Image 1 (cartoon, chains in turn green, yellow):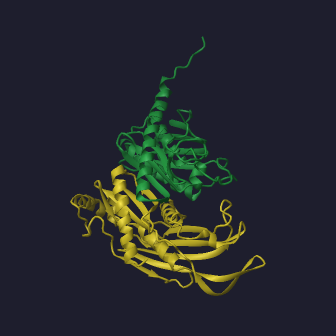
Image 2 (tube, each protein chain N blue to C red; image 1 turned 90 degrees about the vertical axis):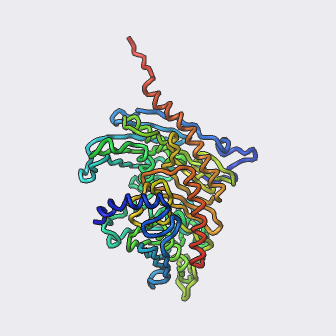
Image 3 (tube, one colour; image 1 turned 135 degrees about the horizontal axis):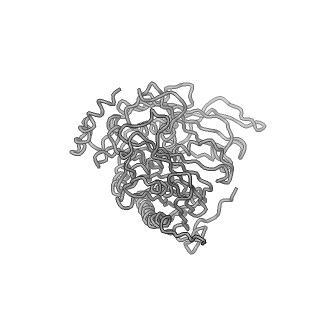
Length: 244
Length: 263
């Protein structure tokens, strides 16, 4: 187990990993990484390593779950047993089930569900390594996987968290900050519509602090959005050299 | 069963809300009548029944000796569980907890835990080995909407009502002594749930409003007006302005409820 650090923000105002309060961790996104899926994406955000894959629209099993007027979106968020410090049991925890639900509800407003009646779309999210803020990184990746699968959407969904550590409002909390800090506010946004599709909070924040944290998280989403679009385009513009 | 009728009522509910009115005559930010009755299950360490309009929730607490979590060796443990009992609604089915009951339990848990109302360090018996585990079990008895607020109230009322047996430690074993000590709570976190219908926010949605709503937001507020938990649910979205408006209203509503219940 890692020990609790004395201070989460040093005298210069820098965080444990040397970031400024409003700085994101380095993000690397790749689209179309899994050949068997209809759409997929991989994201690295700090030490987070997350794969998202989409199957569908396809026939829904069990069939009685199908809806006559729209597709059924299903989402499964899981953490690999080796993704955290102490081995996580592969059985779904209550947290996994809650996160699967909130991630699905964060993505659902973006999808034109009515285009594919009587079908199902399955989103699978596998957290290979967790470093705080996995639900947000998962949403960012899963939205790209949906786009990669060619599913019509209103906008991409981008997610980012902000929170409070050592009485400072900071962006994109990493594991230690999340655990030892004062509060965590994960937010998902459809940037073009200015629509918040995920909002959770734990910790203690005054109304003013919450407003500041929420605005910082939204700003973070708007910074990730262009990276998301770039990653999606990159899949199609990359030219592969063929040996003659 | 009632979903056909609700389908017909949906438009009416949405149209009325656009005019600032509700089908049951309440204002947009009015709660239904709240009744709290404590100590109704004698076998439980603490218990409470909450009526929020026709929504009825029973919560009971049990305290047992158990092991602490490895990352908090000198703190007691809080476990919140929620049961959507099949008799509470024609749509509740028997079986293991589904995502709705898990979400309900976790939102209630978050409000109590994050408000730091319980001093978990006081529940430690032997660091790393033995601590008290506080179980809060929420039983939904009648579902008429807004289970989160009713369950959070019931859980808090049951905890306020909780008495721990006196004990002493003899050779690392906990020995129960006669008499009781109440569990001390320093804060009263109150959950306030909003439904977004027709782009307007309403407080404390009842069942038919929940079946009409686009989306839902729960904000839990402590005695100082600080926000200690939040959860958006449902498949719609909020604008940033609506979220801040809700946060402000939640603070006022939580204060009103606390005053009414003398907490």
